[in-house]
Image 1 (spheres, one colour):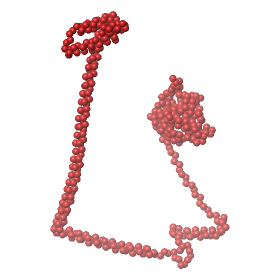
Image 2 (cartoon, one colour):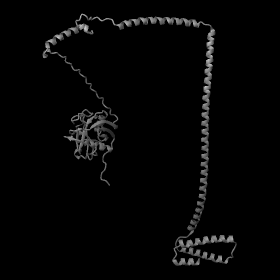
Image 3 (cartoon, rainbow, N blue to C red):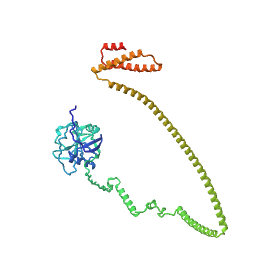
Image 4 (cartoon, helix red, strand yellow):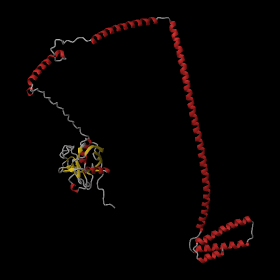
Length: 446
């Protein structure tokens, strides 16, 4: 029998930490440490621990995290100030996988927490234990102490990617609304460039050219410039000449207007002709209507024959389905009759078996009744056996004296006598505990 007993109380809350080394399931003791559990669950619901690192690692001792600043100096509780320690006599630092609050002194708990990597009895009554790592996720927790460590801080720290509350023992918790600070982007002031012509060897000439270009730019502000404007060439004129394309466009516009007029005239003529046609005699209308009737009849006949073919195909399909149903019914009835016959045969066989069993049972009852009629061991039983021997002797003497009767009666009597004789011998040899000399006498007499 083992000497290890579970003294820890039952848990009532559950949280999942998704870390860079894998998932870690945490069960919480909400009844034993209500303040610490409420603080931890609300911070998890608000996403306070998301993307925070485990900033402190002591191999074989603890792994600490829960600080948003990442250096161990930050972190606040949901109460706005540090809350008191919560100790319980059944919660001790006796093993690895325990979750406790990190603090800088007495009653100085904030948001930071740590996991124990082994038994740490020196931390008893100094830190609040409020949870434990459950299941196989303990092995993921042990990975947190692996890696390069310098001055109690890992070179490549592991992260808490996300927290998820699976079972909340405090249904009244409401996550706080976090204000997002919107940073205004300041536009950088662009410095205007200043041209310093004194640095150039040809600075004076460059200044003169710059002055001329500024004057020209001021003249043609908002206008396009060309070589006609810049150069002082008398052959070049600043006024533009009309292009051939413009002339062609004007001709096209004129042609379009004429075409529009022609189309309008044609429409008027068509309207007049339609009015005249409407005033024609009724004979023409009657002929057109008769042609329409004939066409309608033809279409009706075509539709009739098409529908007729479809109906025939449907009837064929229905007949085939009916035949299949009838064949299935026949097979079902045949199988049913076979099952009934098999059941009757089995019942008859059982009846035959029962008859033989009843005969055997009746014989057993006869033997039992005769056995019960025998007296118990003692003087009375010896007298009973001696009386049976005398009866057996008398039957033998009487059988010798009697004359032979008919063959059938003799055979029956012999069978009965044999049965009785063998029964008597059985009683003498088995039931009674006689001496060896008595058995010899019985065999000699027989």
